[in-house]
Length: 368
Image (cartoon, rainbow, N blue to C red; front, side, top):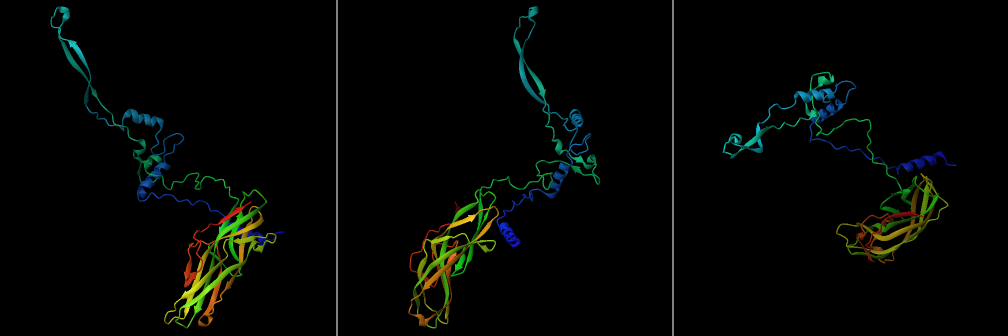
């Protein structure tokens, strides 16, 4: 039976995999438009809707009122240009052939008409209309509806800011702790994954692969000015165990298998002491390739969240005979999981014996 603590822990874990809705970021019309222009556009829009029986809204004329404006020509120009244009030529016979006139020559007369072009009727939305026509109290203002100005901060009945629903085909989601150091003998969380509602089977066998690096750091104390050369220090992974946790409790029925692409490196600590300095920091981080964790056979009920931890036992060997000239302290060494550093060697007062791996692999998590 699941207790309330387990339920609360799972609820907290599930919140880590919650995808927040898309944030609404309206585009500001400033400074292209002034506040007065935006207010005018919004007021005119509010007052532009039709009333049931009569025209009580600004710039929204009834059919009869529009006809009256049309026939009266109140909004049209009354000045017409006198432009003459030759439309045709007509030939007449000069003389009277019926009375014996012998002159039968033809005379051409040009037929002309006066052409007038009426001006384009103005946009009714742009005709200033007093607020008193809309029963708006207060000092009279003249409103117009300029459709070229955006309608900003205008409330509608429906405001949907999210994107269209997208069909989610992912069956699980992961949270990766990048550059997570796992020091010698210490269990360290390296990643978590949650089962989503689209899961199609009651259980899956997962395989997790990730780039790893071996790391070492220490403090060297010396009283001599002679060069320090601590050679052939061997660092190797002797044993690695992956642990699966559910709500803070280890899952007992699963037996993961860990395998490293490369599990050891040999390096030297070498530097020349400086005058007046006796303590020196040394460190080295070397990318080793990939770590594969297999046989993660887990139940996959929607909402389940699993945490994966890694426990590595790393051995160090130093057979140097110059121990009387220096002392080593604060030694820390182990494995860096989900490595996202440079694939080249990172070293301080250290040198690597072998050639570093140059191709950095990527994280992957798959189930069958």
